[in-house]
Amino acid sequence: MDRRDFLKAAGINAGALAVGMGLGAAPVAANGQRAARANPAGGASDIAVVGAGAFGGWTALYLREQGHAVALVDQYGAGNALASSGGESRQIRAGYGERELYTRWVLQAFERWEARQAEWGRKLFYRTGQLSLADAWSTSLASTRGSFDRLQVPYEVLDLDEVRRRFPQIATHDAAFGFYTPTTGVLKAREGCVAVADAFARQGGTVLDARVEPGRRRGRTLLELKRADGGTVQASQFVFALGPWLPKVFPALLGRKIQSPRRAVFFVATPPGDNSYSYPNFPTWSAGGAYGFPSVEGRGFKLAPRIDEVLVDPDTQDRHVKPHELAAAREFVARWFPGLRDQPLVDARICQYENSVDSNLIVDRHPEFDNVWVVGVAPATATSTGSCLASTWPTG
Image (tube, rainbow, N blue to C red; front, side, top):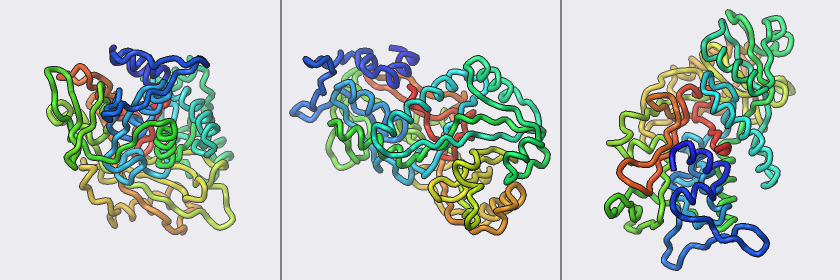
């Protein structure tokens, strides 16, 4: 099974993924549905997925829904405060420049989030729309427009007069035009990761809060994961979906292929009685080298300027906002959103995002093992998706 098949199977047909892993399909019950395969008495699973973030959680859920015995392992738990996908909100945008494949996945993600939140009875996805202020047609933006034309994604190119008429809250400064995509939106990222893990557990999946590393092997086969408490996790196949922890688990393989920069995000209170900066009255936005979201569920108007994006260790980085970072954020608000100039800060977060060396997802078998997959890392071209990137992994 190659990488393209893995991506297709993990999000669209998890049963095919399991067959590609050599597991075979789960048995079919009399009603025509896949019968859930319980974990064997010895505690081993068909598949162990390490990492309960967006990539790992969705992979585990899809496989479990096909009836396979799956263990989902995370050292801090789904939606934890150290995770790249653990913050309150993340954007799902549709524009990825010349990487049209990602746009195709995102379009499916919109539909899947809508269906899942209806299934689970909890609001997770808000279609805010997305506004980018640009001073020229960059290669990436022109490629995005071409992809949108081919895929019939609705968008508008707004002159500055129209931007000011629709969105008087934002200053246009030296922008030449606005590029507006009405169908994109914001995810409640932390809650989304928790919702996926909860759905997985309800369907009989095994959730383990444990720190693990590759354990015993036989030739090209990994036999188990070693737990920090001395135990083991046994499975036939293993998927490592660890985001910024991938270089720590596989330093020789990925130590120079993944970087995790620090990112500060801020939330500003909206004026009393003024909902013009809140969903659904304002879109997600990018301008002046920053991006942000409208206030969702009263959490505050979000902005993420580019400040001190130094490389960090996700386990040990200091997550306090520095005085100069706060000063830069206030200066940005005053310049681009003058109506929020005197509004108080209600929250600030430090997290990390991940970049790969070629700005693409990393999805492949581990070269030393026939039963180990390495999955993860949001592409560098998608960094405006969120400071702690929301994943479109539910598209496959």
